[in-house]
Image (cartoon, rainbow, N blue to C red):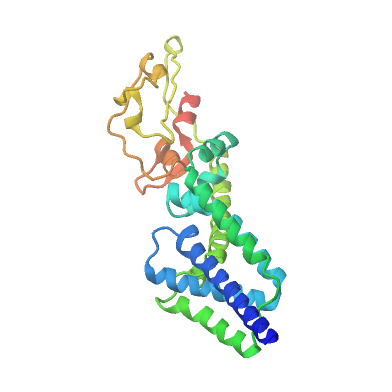
Length: 289
């Protein structure tokens, strides 16, 4: 009888451990690594992620623990961004690529307290499943069946892009797509630097040396116009603009949603084919006069 109750206790403990991994997968796919997901996505993604963790745990507990730790730190990076800025895309990574320490610190200051609380609770769940002692034993046939399920689900809507294959595994999707976008950003940065290094032809514009003037271009970067006093905001936060002779544009429309994508299109020369040349911009024009 004592042995019977011991076996029952062990089975219950194993079931609780499995349910804990399932809960971890659901929290990750439906909350921490997605924004406004559909019920279909939550179900399929949670199931695929659960299978992924179970397979790792059946291979070696160390692999499972590493995946859980990576997943937690990934959630700490992705979840605040999803809640504040929306889905992670190339434009978001561009802002990270060109940011500085001061901007990064100001970003953390605007993260709501409840996000840190949710991440703390998620960290407790992560720590619990890491401390589960035994491996999950799955026969070889069972592993093959689970692998088939893992790779069948991404094909339900067809494959448009290579990353669609891992669209239901956010722990893999975000690092892979971020790495691809990062390489594209680096290539674009190299191209921009090469463009800026080109010397444009000397302009034919002439100016009277006795009438030289100093021009300052003020660009409201990362700020909405209705939050500037010069555009009607009640707080006086634009004293330099208001106390200087200036030309203020009232009808400018940004050419893109992010600073990086729109700024060089704004200040650089654009031909009839809408191709911009960074080597020819407002700054270089003034330097050549």
